[in-house]
Length: 114
Image (tube, rainbow, N blue to C red; front, side, top):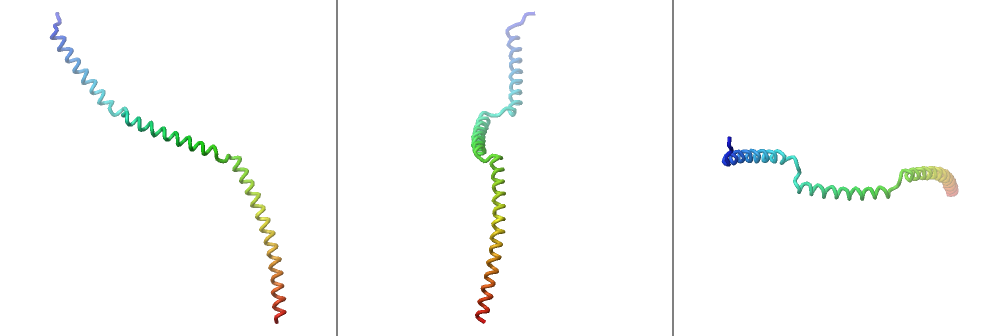
């Protein structure tokens, strides 16, 4: 059985046609599976911006007060609150004495006028 050039061309044409159809089907099937270059570039730019924002936020948080700083502030505010209460009590007592003295003066002046 001799194979002629025409037979080889016929078979190769069929094989190439089927191969092209298979490649086209694979490309069509995978078309939605991969991202376009423009989409990947836009996403990379967005990630870069987010990384810069994250670095800026991290720097701001690092410059903020620590847990220990806040605990010391809370303790100091507690002391100030106690001092303010003591001062209010002292001022309240002093004001009561002033009210009593003022009442005596008013009473004395009213008696003097009558």
